[in-house]
Image 1 (tube, rainbow, N blue to C red):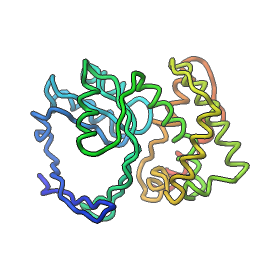
Image 2: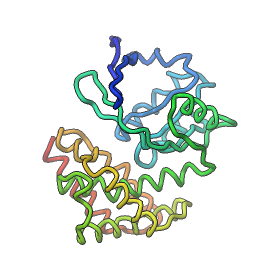
Image 3: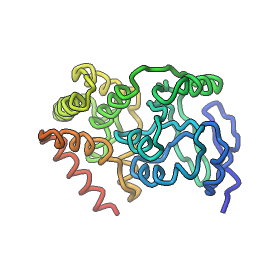
Image 4: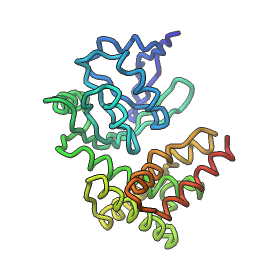
Length: 262
């Protein structure tokens, strides 16, 4: 059954209606399809996507976590445009979305010229966007920062800003990052742990009042994306015969907290 639409409210006070449908046939004929589902739903979407879009459709993922790009490409049998975004939004009520700040978006990959097409569309919409020759590195960088913020915010039940100026939290974040950087290297991506810790601290400052999505999921009794973030880091290391003790404990704690909230 189709829905009439969702109301989007902007920070400048504007309001407009976005068409919404639960019918996957609405995707047929689309030139570009963005996949924005949570990582927990990527496998389901990937399974149906080949039947929902045409062979010339550009598929884009800007999702959080690791493994989304690979799942979509395996299902479609072709490259997808992938990257990260810092554009924010929050659901302010039933059928209502409050648009957040227009943070930067980075895209890359896909077929010939597809990333440039996607970047052009986003730029026309007034969103700051750039093209990277290495989208996998951008995805890893964001995933590592998320791995060092989201689980701790969720377990401590605090907004991001309260993770700052806490020596024990800082030590945990550095340990999480160091293990994740090692896993990234096993995946062919070279990262700098020191730079990522600075980025983590900066994100906590810039989003000080934000309650991370993992905390919101636990409070709402929803499944979290822990398996696509710290859990995926663990899986990549385990496949190469490495253990990551800090991320392992973090994953078990978040899964336990999530289980208790269901």
